[in-house]
Amino acid sequence: QAQLVQSGAEVKKPGASVKVSCKAFGYSLSNYGITWVRQAPGQGLEWMGWISGSNGNTNYGQKVQGRVTMTTDTSTSKGYMELRSLRSDDTAVYYCARGGRDSSGWFMDYWGQGTLVTVSS
Amino acid sequence: DIQMTQSPSTLSASVGDRVTIICRASQSISTWLAWYQQKPGKAPKLLIYKASSLESGVPSRFSGSGSGTEFTLTISSLQPDDFASYYCQQYHTHQSFGPGTKVDIK
Image (cartoon, rainbow over all chains, first blue to last red; front, side, top):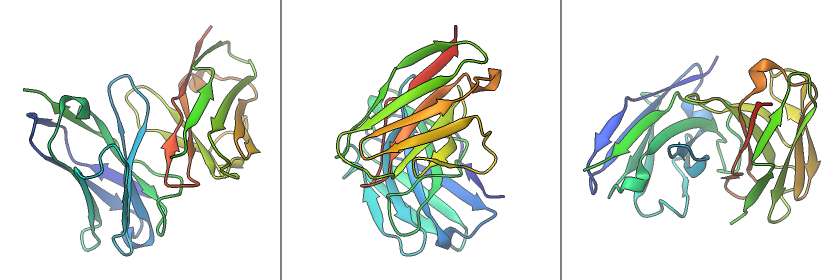
């Protein structure tokens, strides 16, 4: 049974950076991709981007393009999402999820528990 | 970018009701569509992929249909555990989600 376990909640000041980790259990990270999705308080789901676990290819959403970097470390079965120049509207729960290996265009069958990132001065 | 819409945004229903949620895409996505259920404070859960394929372990009262630009999620007989929010997701070109439909108790 696959499982994704994310790092804990973060509180950051505007302008800072945050890096959220996502550890995969029960499957090989190199056979899948990781998709990152966020959800602002009381709002819907927003796709942030995707990274291939096999070759590190990425696709990022327009709203975070230029501020986000997604990486993986197959030796530790971990994925990472770093978001820079944080603003108050980046306050959200950030989810990692198992996605397609070769393309960002795929559904997500296993999800992490979510990481709350709060941006506040 | 492909835009997704859902209707209704909120749906009030009773246990045992047949419930239908509609999802529309701004351009044809063939059958590259998934449906997710989300409960408060929890991660989304995959229900349906490729428009009509039921994810393993999901009750058969859930079904999906459609192709091109119009899709439906149907719950044949609403159960207490089904009161939640539902999101459609296109994965034809990258990904995007619909705004969600909240199913609450009538």
